[in-house]
Length: 591
Image (cartoon, rainbow, N blue to C red):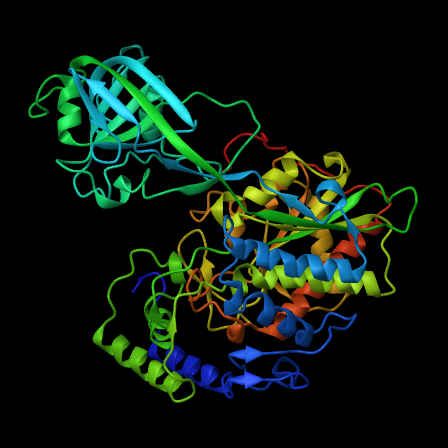
């Protein structure tokens, strides 16, 4: 169990009571809405037509459909993402919103491709030709790359001591030995927009930046996963039209290949030792993969201001499905031993006392539900809750009497889980002028926040729990003091009663939440944002993130806050004032 977040037996027993109360019949039909009656939450539910107002029952109807097993998780790069976005498109079309995607439609298709290693690739060194798959594999940016140059030994992967001089590495093939216990021998370096590596690792990366290729030795034979194609098989990537930065080809090879490249045994070899020369013919097969944003507009009522937009968004995708588990057993285990779900990294094995609680909770669930195998990552909270909330808000505007002066643009982003792909692509290729977007309101995981949920930890590591009026706000004053103040004022004026938690928004917070959801792709262009979330919980990135565990009444109140905030921003007699420094749009994000 993660020692930062101990779950006391009394709390666990309270959870048992909550789950029993929230369970009940396995199915509920139209006309019976547990979200409104405070009754049991079923495994399956079919609701009636949605209404104009923002209602818990509407949210329940939508989410039980959007996060149903039939959607198979909605992962970007799969047809399941098309299935989920088709539902959103049908709804915005029904509401009569203006399409703002590609070619006059509601979809903005993302340039997603999966590249797999072609075993016809070869390496020639020391007069020997080695074959792809059997002797080596590679992972590079281009479909085809020819590499020819001299070889140098670079020591152990990730060794930040005694760095090789940049001029010694430039234009050469660098052979590296995998660290002991590496899963596949691949050279994986930290980086990316979500956070910066340590200064020592940055220096290490820079020392290898000028290499033609980095070659990591994995042993006498190729591990099974890399041999099937690249580092673990074909993985979708978002193609960027930004100027490409040349980078070394990255390969894993057997010991036999490495010794041919170096012309000698690896044993006792000194870092910087010169090898032979080699040529590489590296080939890849590329396949386009599905993934799309849904974009729709509600035109503003003021002819002078309708050319400006308040963006409201969520992400429509979730993570890949997982290995088969027994659902209730995993639910019970995570509540006690991994209260942050996938974020409970490094959690210790449960104690004997905790196992008693886990088994008691599991037995209580089994008294209600039959045992069931589960492998589908439904993503009910992450981010089914945000997706259906944006739909609910869109319907309230489209069918209701409130017509804001500025236009509203609703964007359901694809690929957030893969690296903020959809929001990156939309903000790089906006379907309205980028400088016409005055603010962005992001909703990601807004369906939980109960007192029993571990919603995160503050900067010092102190545990955070939800409450009846709980809501985390992130980034609301990072670009605009006015926007942060406006959210506070809406909460007070509308008597919503939220207690806002800003702990996760602290500078240098280790979880770096500000950089980890779609709002940041807007913020990097200087667009003021608010990220609303009810935070983490034991079902985060687990197959147990299902609709029956959502707090629908609380989610409806969160949606009302975003609705009211959108009205206030859209009706201002001026654009939201940006009074904080704007980031570099292409730089790293560090909270």
